[in-house]
Image (cartoon, rainbow, N blue to C red; front, side, top):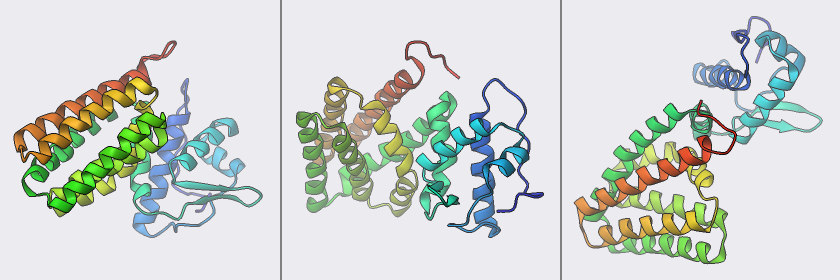
Length: 251
């Protein structure tokens, strides 16, 4: 990743620059990977060079790098520097994932995608899932229930993601399943943000129970509607967590 004439554009001065720095760096890296001009595992220029190229302060740059590392696009190695992480699908999810964390419009767009994918997958799974796939779906639900009893939101979130992937698998539609795999990182971020207390776990579990029961009953329309209600309710909870905290405002 070259610093001279690298293609990185100076960021216009604003009240908050971190979001723009994240988008500029992530988009530049992703485009470079797709074009073959940047390799995964390669070292990026030091802070001084990046801050000069982008026209921002080092503190702003550090905050942006922290977020990109959290999202899996960059890897910070103490004493060595910062590198483009060795990954695959997370590279494509990173800019969208950051948008999910900061933008209401991104949430709306992700809700639309989930409504198309999750809801149709639930409908198809009710018609096509095998006995074994239904059993696996039931195991995912039981893991969620046990995690709620244990008060473990991390385990609950992991089981929640597996539940949705099992529904997609039961749909027997390769495109739906592979697309769900592509946005899995976004799904993980979404779920981890909304599971903040026992009440949120309980409500989420009940929504999944309704989806699970409709699929097991072979009720395609009922499964689709139950999933639609869950996706919308989860989106409302996400908006509440991100934008309605005391002292915060919508972007």
